[in-house]
Length: 164
Image 1 (cartoon, helix red, strand yellow):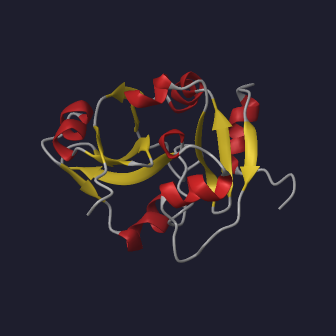
Image 2 (tube, one colour):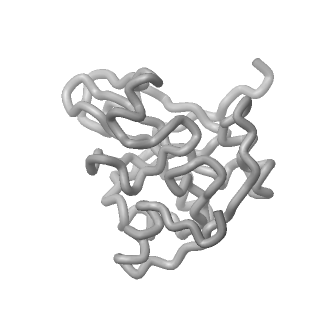
């Protein structure tokens, strides 16, 4: 996979945005962002997962939030101009976005869906997002991610209870 360029990376190249690619070993049985963080050697709060969601008014959207958090559905609905939002069924994600579970990126999907970035991203100089395939992360400044995706920023994440 050396020097593999994904659509997400090519978009950043075209925009002259600085980023780094980071490969990690994929565990097909555990694709969650916290596991990716540990495998890739990144703090879990800096690995931002991209969830494919659907609003009742606006349709499909991406929610980017720290891997150790969960979406506050009511807060995301308010931020996105919906009365309610819900996860897109896993079987629909590939058809809608061109991405598979564990490799959904807010950049380079089949369509330019609206992106919502949790404001916690701005606590860090650098965050990690999927490069659009399993086993490859993009490290970049959150302001650059906001610029590249034209993301709307706000507070819609709640800390995941790891004791469940």
